Length: 109
Length: 115
Image (cartoon, each protein chain N blue to C red):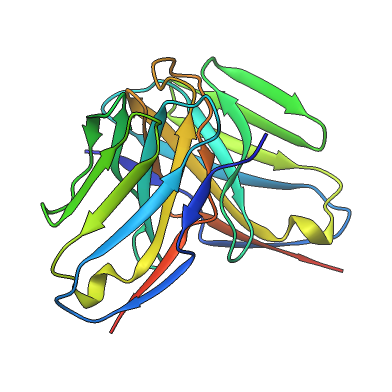
């Protein structure tokens, strides 16, 4: 079966750093995506990892360990606009994404 | 380049009715995937179409169906609506769907309420 776990909610302070973890157990693995979704809006692509290691993109970084079935999304210099849900998704077959439940991040002043 | 568009944006139906939702992918994209998003179940994959053929299917009953036209536009249909079908239905497009690292780009979704 497919299982992707992420914390349901997190709270952090503006200007701080937050790490959102994602663990997965899937029957196949063709890469892991992180999406950001603001309330009432479509998910937007943040990052993609298929090899072990860290991918950095501005204030956002994503890490993958395939042997541990583990990824994290790191957000630096948090801004109020970063308050959103963050979705971890595994491409486990063809073009099919299996999503975790999402992590709702609240950034406080 | 215009993004993925979905129509209608909001829809209210009653139990037993059927509904058709439409999705126009980004120009040049040939793969269209559909997802259902609910507070309880999160985002769940419905099906994926490429070149007018269904290539992948999620774990949903046969009441959920779809099709893709030669211009890559896609429709999904839900027949005999149930209260539990109330959800945000998201469409996502990607270039070919063949390359595993291709990013899927999501449309704004159609919010369906079944009364």
